[in-house]
Image 1 (spheres, one colour):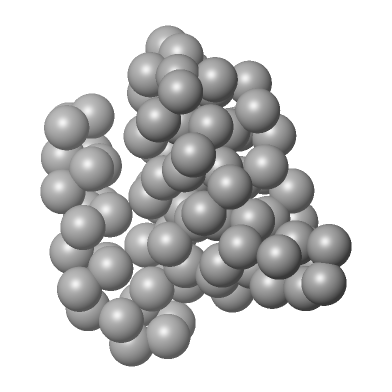
Image 2 (cartoon, helix red, strand yellow):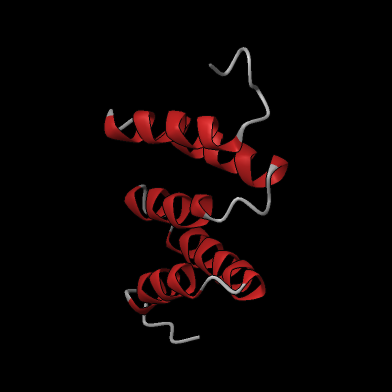
Length: 96
């Protein structure tokens, strides 16, 4: 599907989640980082990328990613996503 629709952010997101299931975090993070670069408004990426950073011990990157996603969620009026990202930030004792 990616060959026929290489610009579809959902397909890249799904591929990254498959790598995450296999605990292949370098591939997971690489895909999510590319997705943020190429589709910066694809909101689901920020939560999952932040979680992947947490797993590999990159807490500062996780926090930065959650904050960036929360700003985007607020900008887009997506209160559900903003709430999920706020909960992720609370795990880091950040109550932004």
